[in-house]
Image (cartoon, rainbow, N blue to C red; front, side, top):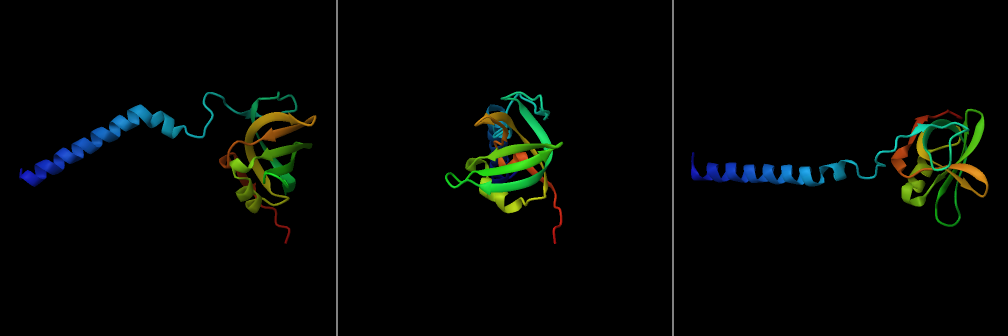
Length: 138
């Protein structure tokens, strides 16, 4: 092998070694970033308790951005129960407001909580809300 080829092989080896070391040290943190660890979401029911992580599919009945804070509030119909869904500004409220319309069907994952005596689902990340279907109103 020529001197240049030996240098290239050595540099490739060092690069691969650095990448493997970084993955072994930080890989699990990088792949799980933004995700809750250990807690699996359960299907939402009327018996779901406060603090429980749940998922559901529902039709959007109404939506509005809060005057202060820029949070998104949805009213959804989940199995004939009207639920409030709270999407904080930090969870992509503005982007979701632009893409969700009344009459759309969404799938979402969030945590059951209570606000002013009313049950609601709080969404943690924009990726936890998936637009399932558009109803054409045109």
